[in-house]
Length: 121
Image (cartoon, rainbow, N blue to C red; front, side, top):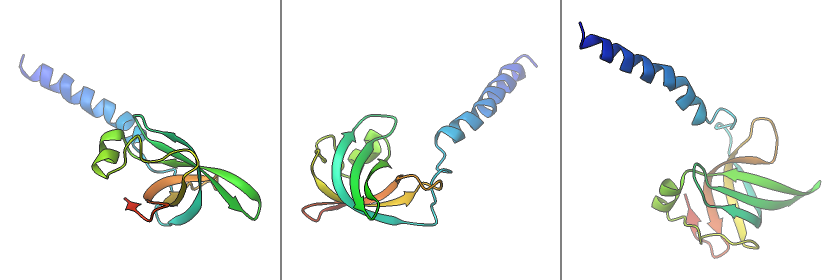
């Protein structure tokens, strides 16, 4: 019986932390049924964990919108060939994203094409 108690406690801790872990990694805010392509100029590139972010000014009918593009963590990005030096302010990029459901200018990237035509996904 003494050996079962630590197992129950460990199981409870794991199960109790699962909702937090799932919420942290949730993509519920993105419309994964749609993909939108944006073209614009990099205004900022934040290469840090827990998520890399690319900010792009996109010209449209209503002026310029700054899109926040969420990417993965650093190790996943590097496995895809995306590094801290990949994007610089002023670069022209084409980004495919699953847009935010609430209509704000942002999304979760699915691929990025650089000005020289290299696609990173």
